[in-house]
Length: 222
DNA sequence: TAGGCCATCTGGTCCT
DNA sequence: AGGACCAGATGGCCTA
Image (cartoon, rainbow, N blue to C red; front, side, top):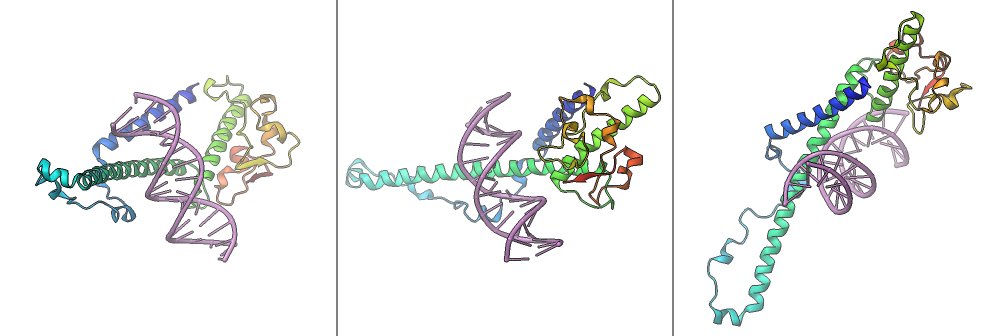
């Protein structure tokens, strides 16, 4: 519950920060990519077209050409507007992805890796964080059990991270591994199951060993 | 050189 | 209408 609240708060906070950042740095600060800027319309698009409107007589002589011209011009205007919107959308998307990457970097910083400067990929970061949180929660829960303490409600989280469909860690040979990731079977999520978990990725910090996180022997990093 | 990872662009969809 | 979000496409870089 508390965790959920924190998650929701974090999301809304991030959104607020993102909006504030947008307001502080209007997207005009970013120049469009070269590939697109090369296709930008001319800064002085056909300004002479409106300078000398034709008389009706003259107009009757060249109506089609003028119509073609004006439609051409409006067509240019439309494409110009479209390009402008596309560039703005590209800038927003770029910023959004940078924001997302910053959040991932922040997440990487609190995850233990070995060596310390080893960089997990995006998917590894997410999977590892998922499992790491679960492992920490289980550690606290088990410690509470050992000391006969009342379990904190916020850590009442019985299930290990789902090893499927694409887990970073999986229970490879545990007889109970088939159900260890299922939220439907919290009963199997006990210290026994923890005995079958261990990080195999060499970049993971040694602190994620059995002693520190109760992560057992044959957990594999997929 | 193939495969993995990443950044960026792009068009579509949904929401405000 | 404009912005956020998403997924697919593409190309660059790196490594085994």
